[in-house]
Image (tube, rainbow, N blue to C red; front, side, top):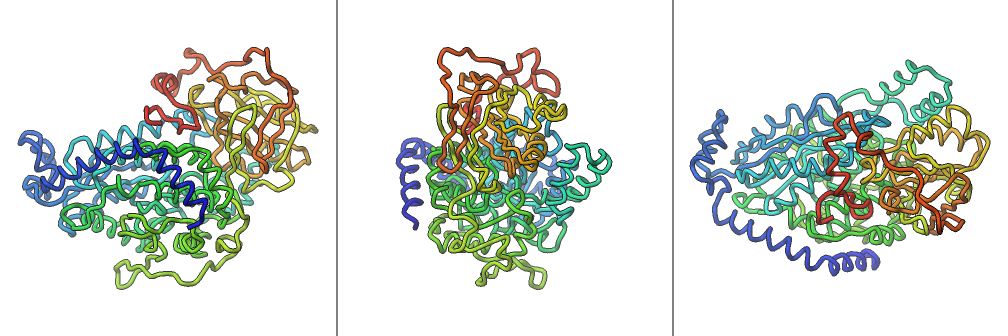
Length: 606
């Protein structure tokens, strides 16, 4: 193993010793009770159990007998969002597979699944990050009936996967597996889409032309094909051993996709106490699995949202992960994949180049991933060197011995795109922030320029449209966008205009306590700034013209003037302003949410 990976892992283990031990004590006590009872639902009083199978049709005798292992299906299905629409047929497919394997499955509950793509720049985006913790609680409600011996989790995008995972970890004695839906096939090339967005921002094309371009990009069931939070979720979950090997990027509605879904239903039964390979999720997600997830995030140039999500997920398993851990790993983990916005390829190109089998294999060979881990495929991450294929209608796994077939998309760790990870941490007298550098040109990694301060993203967009940002270098400061201010919305709408100014030769960057996922693209950015402006962060003291220096190479972020004696300026939206689109229902979240650096969670453990 790489010495820094070892060092960081041991540091996390030492820091988490008490909390992890307390967590595992609960998991192991519940596991012992489950194993001794034979079936979870067999412990229920008669009235409780009768309620649990009253509506069951053909499975009622099996549920009543309480002998076969029971599997909960927790689903994020809805038919508005492309990533989740394929899940419509999954429950019946999984029920058949579980039944064939000797178990019985029920849909235990649903979780909300909102789309950041639909809500970008809208009021609904201010509920997006909060939805992760709602999903965790919804998962807990689904599993709280104590009817189940294992869990199948149906979720793909943004906050859905971290929420499902955090919720499932609170039932850590249950085996759990994610069943992905896969990405849509490739549409309009990303370079053309990005250019269309910049042209639209400049008024060079009409709304109808812009809509044509977007519709050609997002065109069918499946995950969006760019490498944002949704597809980062899938990579991380597989590397954590919570997918069947190679399940991540198989397209929906294909024979292989259906075979993998069936295989997941059969495999989950084998992971229950009845199946002889009892594998509780609380033991799968340990310190090594968390470090593996961080390494995969950095090596793939994944979404900056996971600098918060992984902290929150780790906490749910009694593990304390910090930004310092991520920063130290980023210095030694090479960038081996280039997918949009870090390059022009999409996830289908990554899959065609060798996909997860090559990705996992090269990181294992470099000593950057822990191999001695527990997974849903058995012990050892070596199983994930294999790729699934169909033979006579059945899925089989074959180890991929050849490397990448497209070195412009996927490279060996010995010949990476860059020697360090695509996510850097920056800190200074403004606080600590995350900087995604994988798509930023080297000459833009350092900028020193006057601040232009905005308290709302719409004000920046308006200034751009009026030409007030033309012909000058500046650092756009967009504040009061943090978790306790307004839910920490993503600020994707700001990327096209700032990219236009960058292309015109201006030196520009953005500093914000909000989020941008990976969508900052080529624009240098320091995001997730903590402490946020609404919690007394220095961001609230800035004024137009204050010189700011962002150095993503050395990892520094400073205002180059004395702020002492200044009073905060601006403010987050007041309670009477933070209404509409259901936002008033989440006022308690604003009051209790933790800082970005601690996972931006409402749960005490974060």
